[in-house]
Image (cartoon, rainbow, N blue to C red; front, side, top):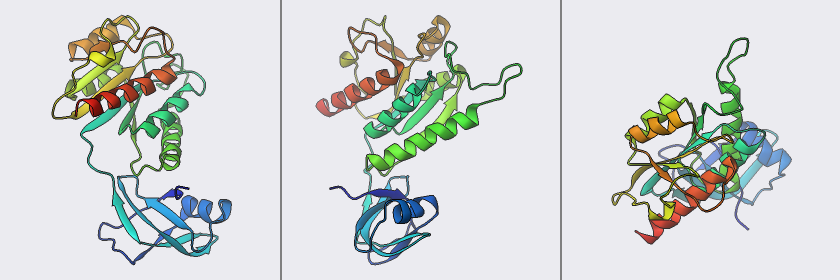
Length: 251
């Protein structure tokens, strides 16, 4: 069984044989909720791609102490996956964030599309909900990182359509998943040298024509994911899985 993973600060000059403390919510969860025992092995990651593995040497109500037996790191990826996910109703956004994290997205953008039913931006008589919404997405991403035993927590940010266009313009390749696209995603030419890959997934009502025009003007390509129309919570996951397979086949 894979060792459980917890998140904590790690020193840059950490060495084998040293010990680290896992405290606060993470430490209390390990000690009190999971009832971790002395001698059990844990993975502890800093959320930025670095981790250690080792046995627990002490347990208290405040957390656990772990002796460093292994030092690990996530290799620098050839492709960095930025997923632009439109805000969706119910828990569909959180489902998307969870799965995209499991697949290795490095950045997840919460996009306030014009047709999004859920609104985070401030309107007349309504408060700005972006901070609360981002906190929820980040919590889901953090939990999914731990569940999937990844060492890198995705950077979760909020963006308007204009800001998404800026992200598209800076990317090495930008794609928009769209039901009317004629080019299958499988025919996309990936950058030979890798780089920043951006995938845009629209809301339940679809991406508005002016948004499509804006993204296309910045270099984004429309791609089809198949014969059917996927939910917003699954379109990004399908896109990322296909792109990662293409990257492996063409490496």
